Amino acid sequence: MSENILFNQGQSISSKYDFSKTYLSADIFKKKDGSGPAPSPQFPERITLSDGTDIPLIGFGTFRLNGGHGVNTMLQALKTGYRSLDTAVNYENEGAVGEAIQRTSLNREDLFITSKLPGRHQKFDDTITTIQESLFRTKLDYFDLYLIHWPNPLADNYVEAWQGLIEAQKMGLVRSIGVSNFLPEHLERLEKETGVLPVINQIELHPYWSQPKQRKFNKDHGIFTQAWSPLGRANAVLQDETIRKIAEAHHKSIAQIILRWELQLGVGVIPKSSSSKRQFENLNLFDFELSTAEVNLITNLDKPNGRTNNQDPAIYQEF
Ligand SMILES: NC(=O)C1=CN([C@@H]2O[C@H](COP(=O)(O)OP(=O)(O)OC[C@H]3O[C@@H](n4cnc5c(N)ncnc54)[C@H](OP(=O)(O)O)[C@@H]3O)[C@@H](O)[C@H]2O)C=CC1
Ligand SMILES: O=C(O)C(=O)[C@@H](O)[C@H](O)C(=O)CO
Image (cartoon, rainbow, N blue to C red; front, side, top):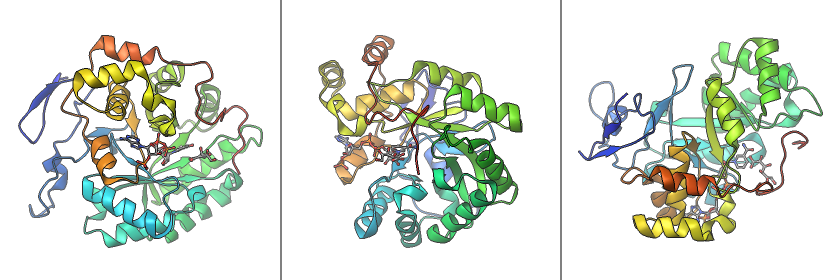
């Protein structure tokens, strides 16, 4: 594995991240006939999942981006260089995602669209029809990734939902299947009862809740960790003094330091922003590197009760 990655601007940076399967921006942008739009210098780098699918390391979070404002914000994000949109049935904005996709001139194959199955539809047949309804709302033929949003272990239907996702993948409705908010015991049960592990586990992760054990479990099982609320939903972490000092040393914003720390942990990120300036900032993470000491300083900010909204997947019930 090379430690030095050449980006399309011609600059070279060293990285501890495994970028061995990372594309150069221009490669992804080319159409089969060699034509197509000029590559964006902000195009997010990609990594290959255990099923062979490529996913942008930086996606765009869409929670609370609904209606016309949602469509405009997503279009702005696509213009800025994002290629991955993270939605869910429960965000009630799959329609806005579909509208933004219809209005952009980008090709479908250049986009990576994720949605998520809500707790109330975790029965096998429901899983299939819910995915079909998500496809109708987004006006898509397939999702790049579909996740079980929460395990809801007290209802205990997540294995059946997982069997539904496996079937939906066979039907061609989804390219990759994964989960969100799954603890080791939930993942072990999926493997034991279906023989199929998710390729992604999307979990809450930011400096005050950095999840070392869950990250290790995911990595040991070939499951890519993707961080939700990677900026802690703009809570106190964006004023943290330790991170502020690191940000000043690198001439970057606190948000950029946090997102870069997550990438260096080997985690993908899906920050949400309504502002084009902050969207741009959150995508520009590849021209600097944190030292091991800086990474450790941030990792040590972890708090025992650091969740943003006290949502513990062992007991949290999502409708
Ligand atoms: N699977 C799951 O269970 C969950 C998944 N998610 C997904 O993760 C995504 C991201 O998480 P989310 O909860 O939205 O929170 P984030 O951690 O992405 O934080 C978003 C907040 O940070 C602000 N912000 C964004 N960029 C910057 C910046 N550069 N500087 C300062 N402030 C900034 C935004 O404000 P502004 O918009 O004004 O820029 C907004 O208030 C969601 O949108 C959703 O797609 C979220 C929760 C649970
Ligand atoms: O945003 C999501 O994906 C969720 O799972 C929600 O539960 C969200 O975290 C929330 O806080 C809703 O109140």
